[in-house]
Image (cartoon, rainbow, N blue to C red):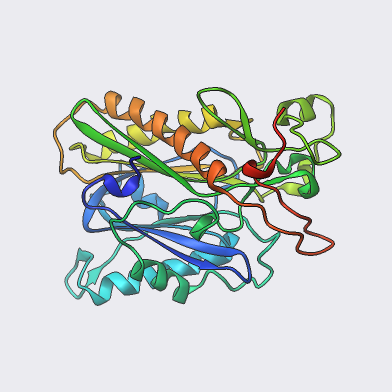
Length: 328
């Protein structure tokens, strides 16, 4: 099975804090990669994402941070920058090489009450752990504390996880990494099966997020700013910055296929795109179509790889995962 590290020029590393159930995931492109990005949710938490816009003059970045900890977790990017600086990577300026490392966060403070992690040290450790090995999935890195199906309350939610998938077609490789922490359900994009989402009142079955909304059982106001799906799609195809930005926009369709409902007012969805340019020139429409496919699959793989988290407190109950749920 292909994962993001099958794209030449990319490395992925995780750092995980089991005690606070949080972590971060770093994608390194030390020699540079052409970036793009697309905001598709209404409550994003990001760092330096203006660099990704096609009208800016920045032509490459050197890493990406996907992290837990809500806005506090953005501090981990400083550790990634330090790791790259120590090894001489970055944008060459008159006085120094400056690594460019945009990032985005998910909200995992149901578990992580420290409000101090992920931090610079954790970001540095994730960069240290980065390799070309197949991406480890599930409750690891930025996926450590993520959940799905919170729109009827945290006591009816399920555990989610970080996932990755890829495909090789039309002479190019396209792969994705996803951190699904949505208000709604994670579903299999091919079958529609719910993989992680709102549970029934007895906690033993799937209620269906859209059905819950139709029944008036949702608690949107209590969950503002606590949900996000982060996606990254990457390719070895030669693309310029405008083309890579178009790929990010097309790839967002993968979220709509695997999250139900997607892009709500209470989700901060963001899609990054990278081109390492080590493959052939291919029309960006082809890459975008493939990117949407693999992003949907990556979201589903993350839910399938998640594991149940035991009851943490009176406030945070047991959070079951797909593998432990009763099937219809």
